[in-house]
Image (cartoon, rainbow, N blue to C red; front, side):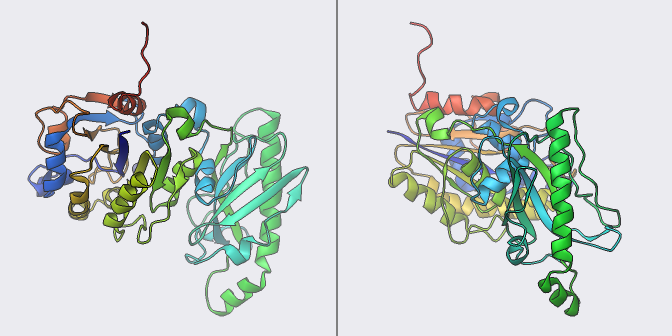
Length: 408
Ligand code: ZN
């Protein structure tokens, strides 16, 4: 059977930049391997959510993997905790957490507690707290982060963040976002846990040590992005493809775990500009040889350069991807799909709704078009036309010859 590699370069799309001769970073980058692939494949443009819609990275990935957002997306928390290896049960509410620093009046001094390296020794004293039939489960993430699950009957994710997202203001009370009894109950329970957590953390011996060392104490749990977990159909059941995820960033491992893929550990995959892209591509090729049918490979840093407005950095990182992409040139029996999740134009320093280039490459699988360059304007002339994210998996399934016949 044919195999699939889906390579998503985060924040890939951009707008023309004067200093780059009115080219985008992707167009200005020297990318002989990606261009050679485009020449052999069929190209197009895609908007992960829809034309004019500005996608988050969580929603765009779910849509590209074929999951309807109205059915499957309730908030980023469920995806983030999945990425930490926390098992979700139907009815759980999951949140992203930070350990931060507040003063005696609960005014935020540092949202990341001096970028504390490990929240593990702090959050272990919070894990397992109970209140009104609800249990708090909490696990350290990378650095100052943690994953939080509320487990018990009658919960809702329709609650606000307590994270004020800025320093110098008081942490927010969590409040319900709709009129339901469940949202009111969840807000009450979470406020209770947050107060308890502060009482436990403020006198924590490790915080005494931090104060002595002149470091800000990790004395408050800031949380955001509540999501409600409903069991979802696994990717392998949905498409009949045994799938794995290769990613450095926590959110993307989370996307893989959330959709039931096997998340592979790849040494050197960091989710940052220093990531070992060759190691990721090699791991994908090995995974397909070893029995997986579908490898979702995520590369993050182009998005971060876009958010910094660093078009030279973005261009250089795309060239780094291209150098590693030599190993993808001659994959036997493989459909290679390359795209971004959204545009992050350097001029805007944030995600935009501009469409992103897409190519599908596989000898004997696709009808090549006349596009010979992987870039925004070149791909806009391609044979795939303009797709939405939800159209990508059906097209992959069709190219693999696995689409069911409609009618007779
Ligand atoms: Zn993204």
